[in-house]
Amino acid sequence: MAYNDFLAAFAKAQAVGSVEDLLSTHAKRYSFQIRSRERAKSMIAMFDEKLGLDWKGLRVLDIGCAYGAFTIELAKRGAKAVGVELSDKWLRLAKINAQDEIDVPFISCDAASRQARRQLVRYGPFDVVLLNDVLEHIYDTAGLLSNVRALMAPGGILYFKVPNGKATRHVLLEGHKSVFGISLLAPDYWPQFVKAPFQIYYRRWEYFTALFNEFEFTGLKVLNVNKDKNIGVTRTHIVNDLQKIRDHLKPENFQNGGQFKTASEACQQYFDEVAEDLEGMGWQELFFKYRVTFWEGIIQSAASQSNGLFSLRRGKASL
Image 1 (cartoon, rainbow, N blue to C red):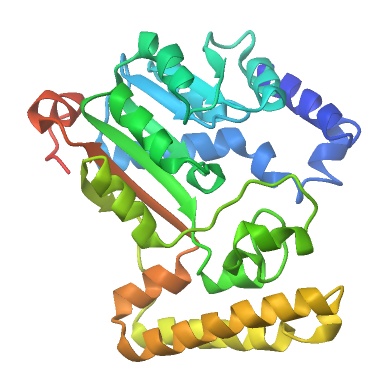
Image 2: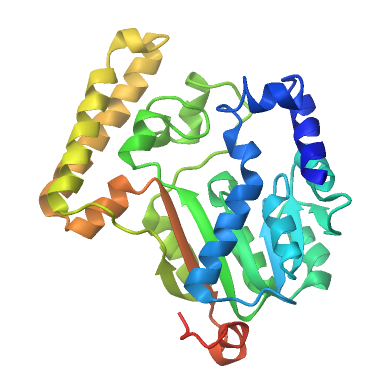
């Protein structure tokens, strides 16, 4: 099967031995990649539940498609899916992932460039655009959203999922490099803690809402659900995590004094902000800012909804 070929190629690319080694010895480290098809199916199920989309014939653009799992699974549901990826390494794996299973175009380009707009226009206009774990890796987010708006069909849907660097859990252990505290730091400081290259930018929620407003996306629907029983539970989780951050913030937990100084200054600013928010923020705001590790939502291009989203759905109300 194509997926088994993908696992074999991925194991080789990561120099971890055989597929058996990948799925046993290295299963925890590479669970994100190994479970890519499962994650894709879960996302499609979420879309089916929230929006009731009929995927057949829809034009879908998967930006930052990596190994191609989401693009492939959507194409298998009948969508005219296109995957875009900047890394040639990942694109080669995406093509292996799809071979002998389904014919999907995978395109190498920088999705924020005008060249990408010219390359992709022939496949559009797109009814659905996916930015799944992508926005944190893009420097030119304005260029990206400008392209997305230009390539979308009237009333098309944009799905996004982006990590929250202010979440206490990400401060304790950043999700990409597994290093304490760096989600609070500007990229200029990251070389003190991790080896380059890296391209990760943690931004505040307000950054993204301002960006969406600038490019005239409307009807934002946040998909995160507050599962805490009450505000007391939320506050307890935040306070407990803050204590864990303070407990870790000791010189012996860092490689050198420079690391400790940089992390201490960033964490002190963080402590001050959290203290003010615990006093002044409501329950939902606190949960969203400090407990949600990945912000997830759906938003719509500003053009007439009657010509776009509503016609894609199976009798459900618009966003």
